[in-house]
Amino acid sequence: MAFSVELEEWVGSLWHRFITRHASPDFPEARVELSSMQRPLALLFRALGGASGVGVEAASARDLLLRRNLLQQVAGTCQQLPVAWCDANNLRLPQSLAVYPEVALNQDLYRWLALLAAQAGPMRHWARDNQHWTQELLQRYPALRPRYRRLVEALLPLRPDPRQLGKDEAALEAALCQALREPGSVAQFPRSERAPWPLPLWLYPAENLGEPQASALGYEDEEGEGNQKAPGAEQKIVRKRAKRVEESTGKGGLLLFRLENLFSWSEHIDLDRCGDDSDDLDAARVAEDLDELALSRQRQRKGGGLKLHLDLPPADVDDIPLGEGIKLPEWDYRKQCLQADFVNLQLMLPRGSEAQPLPPRLAPLARRLRRQFEHLRTDRQWLRQQPQGSELDMQAWLDFHVERQHGQCAERGLFMEQRQNRRDLACLLLADLSMSTEAHLDDQHRVIEVITDSLLLFGEALSAVGDEFALYGFSSLRRQQVRLQELKSFKQRYDDGTRGRIQALKPGYYTRMGAAIRQATQLLGACKQRRKLLLLVTDGKPNDLDLYEGRYGVEDTRQAVMEARNQGLLPFCITIDREAGDYLPYMFGANGYTLIRQPQQLPLRLPQLYRQLTQA
Image (cartoon, rainbow, N blue to C red; front, side, top):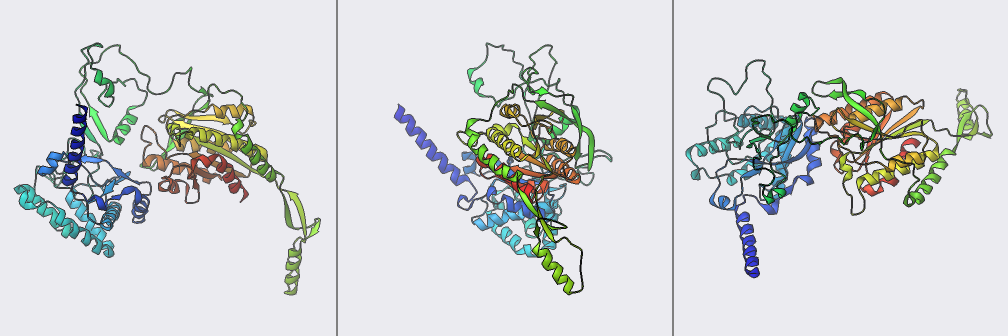
């Protein structure tokens, strides 16, 4: 019996691979992954005028009502296909392309989509807008015409045969092929109940609402030009799918449940969030960023019920707040203004922190760093062209002699004096403590442990050199709760109390960088030192549960960095995120960040980077 089951599974897997391979319209041997071209595509997109805060990311598969052949119906494939789309905040391209049988053509297709997205604007009619954008792009850059013609000529033989389609579908397919050959030549498109087979050379609407799309051509109403609202009505293009689910009343009680339900956590669960403290505006913005909405009709409001605490932990186990919250502004790039008192920042102290010595495993490295940095503290420099000193400045004497020969005799000092160099600088280090720091780097190390070791060794090094410094960690949970962990202020000494607070750190929530940088700017700006360095250690890009996701968070962080520079501070970011090159140059500048490719080296590299930044 066991042998027959194994044989059946083996035959089934062979059949699945065979039917799937033959039903797929792709060319797997010529597949190109987006990850291999992500950075060049982002540069190409921005070089042709694309928004600098928009990143190139993979698009999820989209439900399409297509006419599938017999093999595809048997295999159950081609029901969901990835298509390229873009809006003001996103450029989404298929995760991989195998449309053409040649790798070079698939690579050119990726480049064409990035160029077309840089040219694109709001989409009103799928086919006409893509024709218009293509026409403008080819007119502006005539050198692209041979590549575009090569892509079209290679694509047309791969399109469905109109003779095997229905009358309406065949007419639509013929119109689309004509639009590909001569962009702008087709103004009216026939109606069809089914969507045309995806056109990889065109962009699609940004995640349509509703059920699987039929054609997405954006047909005009019979009465006017397009689906337009009344004057003054605000129209938003939203990128998400929606589905309606039936409300589960659970009338069977606790005893009448099925055991397999324990394994279906992804199914719909009723949660009453009416008591959530987020306002309606934030809820609307959160819904705007979701990829899919599940809606059900609530028939009645039941009394009592179970209240689940899904956000912050209870006060008796949460970190200890220090004073009242601090109101801070936040930059809204859509309005191009700072929203006053928009964010609430709370200073906190790690709960359960006790004075602890430096961990023994870090002691040898700490001793080596202290010796290196003590040398900076006692470093002596020769000051040239002094009016008096212990030795003659031969270079100054030589310059004086040459100038006197030419009839010029500028007043200058002719001596050298050795003096101890006084380091007139202050540094504040901000460490990202978001929930992503819970992730493992390998079998032994987590990100939070690497950050903790980095803070400890950084404190050992700076206490040895005698520079003024402060240490803070931050995370956030929406704009009402930006949490700033005070590990060491400028007024406190670096001692076992500070070491204990660092070792008590735990991963927090999300990464609202702008508010943390603005508060750090205020703290560092109050210092009297001439040079002020603001260091940010992070493992990812800014994000939060509300509207802070995507371009909004990137733009606010960039604005906060600019505000810090305007106050004479030097902001610098140290990251372990390998994709940092897509967004950090925009936020901190090309020379305002560095990537640590081996995160385990961060504890040693952080003091070395500080030494390089402060010796200039």
